[in-house]
Image (cartoon, rainbow, N blue to C red; front, top):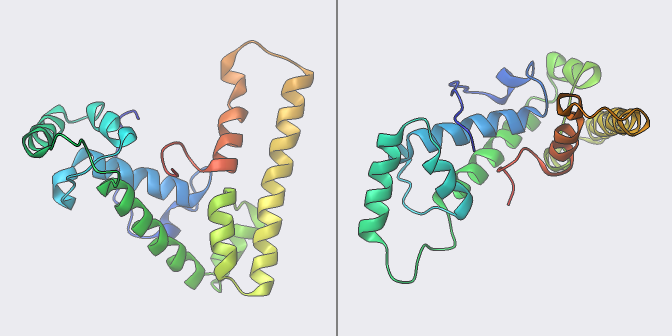
Length: 186
């Protein structure tokens, strides 16, 4: 996990103009905020991923303080299998899915879905489950449109191999589509 400039989003609707799945963008930002100031949220248990992410944070003093606290309170059993950051991410994700579903009747949200909406499979299926049948069909269209675009990009890459890794960004977009952004889903 590399350092990330945190933006203080207050609504999922604020990230609709960003590239990629708005839930992934929002949650990645939220996770970065938790990693940069874990004490503010009472973080005391970390999974492997978030322990290493904290070690790579932009604020080494914050990381050192939390690690000192964790070392002072650790038992011989090791860390618990539950992670406070993972728990906070799941709760925030549920909150943002509910927020988005409650906004599905707004014209600008529907226009975004029709024109450029991108949802990863995980978040698309969560939103779809809370939507009315007509909007659920629109979300299916968004998911399929994104999948078809990725299939086309991958096919082009395979047909015309280019050893320059810059041109292989499609692989990351496919991974996000299939499994959300790195570090968000266990």
